[in-house]
Image 1: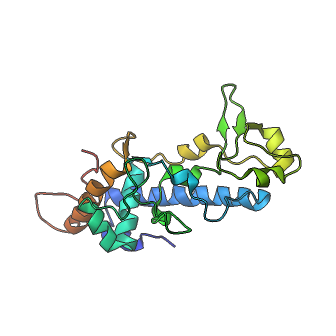
Image 2: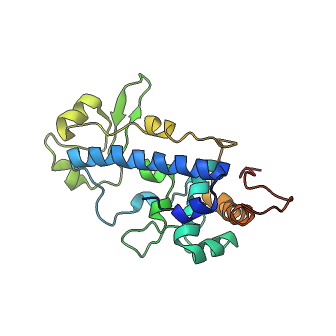
Length: 226
């Protein structure tokens, strides 16, 4: 079931509706591929970790910030209005995501609407210069847990064969999963979350209001990027 079904209903017949559906389908595909890897390997992030979020704030593509805005409007409407006015829920300084909740064991306050990189981190491999898939455990992963594997894991790069021997399978490649993120938007450039999310929420709320309205001053298919 869609996590933004009401917003999609309000945008029915617009370009933004199709973009949002595409992003949600991509997120579902990524979750399916990762779930398969998690089930085969049981290599899960430690409960309540969140260390990868500290000192990090994602840069967002147009399509993913649009989905994040839609998710907030659908699931945290009052919070969405505050962010639209420039007030984020958490004051974590300039280097940590303002949607990161340090006091919650789940940390991400918009988990269902989180960005691509947040979905991929810790559960993806990458291609080296020789175009061979390699994988390196998250630098925050506890050493004692890594050493419990046989052969032992450590914070180094592992080849596809090594990962398959130890874990049973190599995690999906980040670049392959990111290719699934291409959508029909005006631009693939990225902008820091705190710099683009408030404007995007405001514009999406305006487009929702305008959709189905004969006002000649606007159109529901107005692109998000200026």
